[in-house]
Amino acid sequence: MCEEGPVTTVTLEERVLARNDRQAQANRDLLAARRIRAVNLMSSPGSGKTTLLERTVRELRRPVAVIEGDQRTPLDAERIRAAGAPVTQINTGAGCHLDAAMTRRALDELAPAPGSLLFVENVGNLICPSLFDLGEDARVVIVSVTEGADKPLKYPYMFAVADLVVINKTDLLPYVDFDVDTCRRHITAVNPRAAILTVSATRGDGLPAWYAWLTTMIG
Amino acid sequence: MCEEGPVTTVTLEERVLARNDRQAQANRDLLAARRIRAVNLMSSPGSGKTTLLERTVRELRRPVAVIEGDQRTPLDAERIRAAGAPVTQINTGAGCHLDAAMTRRALDELAPAPGSLLFVENVGNLICPSLFDLGEDARVVIVSVTEGADKPLKYPYMFAVADLVVINKTDLLPYVDFDVDTCRRHITAVNPRAAILTVSATRGDGLPAWYAWLTTMIG
Image 1: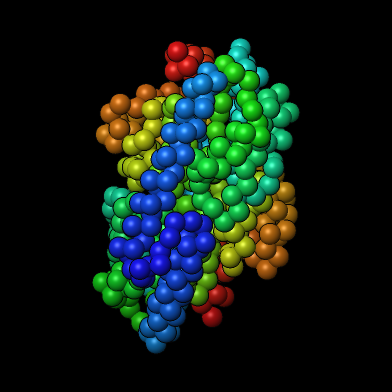
Image 2: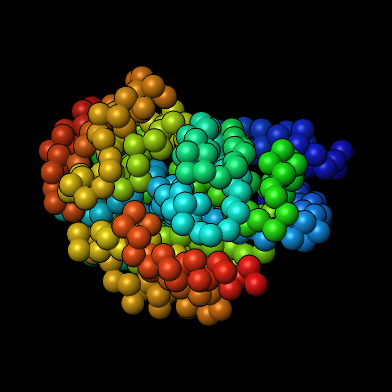
């Protein structure tokens, strides 16, 4: 019986998540068979995910393919295509995150070359995407210095699942009240195993370390 | 019967939303009986909701009370209390938005003075809070210039419910690639009835128009 109430909501969510986890494992198997490594890129809206990807597509000496997630518009996919990578856009409508089934459909359409690096740019949201495994090898969370150093404490679920946290927009540090060391400390408090990098995706500062992390992650 | 599948998910969401709407109406009736006007403040994490509220508490010549929503921490409530307003913090845990029932519990605890202006600072999220009526009189969406002018098009559900959109952090305009007129055009394309203000909550630019809008809204 499907009754109103939080308990039923939780039960349904558990079913949804269990089904998602099964699809995520299927995605992971498919990607492994094709020697494709996948990175799930998550952040608030406007933290610089697409700008970081544009530069990565242009500068990383390796085949890159991208799945773009947004509620609406093909704007980000157009930017990635202009940067030179094959891309598929997912529009989630009212949805607040990508899931493994959406990712699989996009993957079938995109058909990345074997051996390539696949980025999945999630919907801009510092909460919901953290719950949904897409079959990725690594999760990268971006936080920009304009958002404030307290964000890891206030949105701990997202930072807890990160393999790497990228502190972006360091070019704006002179103009905002943001202490990098405080933010690092908060990230580590929530997730001691997360690597942390500071970059300016627009200016290029710190990007060699980002490329090095990707190369190490790719193995 | 509660079966897996998107149809059941939608049905459950509709029930959850219908129940929320009933509670929101009860909140609205209670607030009206106490001559309390309520503003639901929504944005991405780090767009400047709390900074705008701190200044508003200090500068608006009127009793203000605040309900603070965050996944975790009492950090924002502490800032508001230091600014001089009564405040209640709601921590949603894994939850991605406030709802009318949480708001009611906070309202009963806070018990704002009759005639006061109540701000509800929602969880930082440009998607999920747009679906949940809290019983407020007005919805204000904040977008900061560091997030990019394309956000109204990419997250249209949030901008569609706004009575007012505040473009914040105009002090950073010299350092970012953000065209105010383009952003205004995108907001109007998604929601022709939304008022639009540009402010710098840290520097104070544009705040007289914000206070004037609040006073007009309060009636």
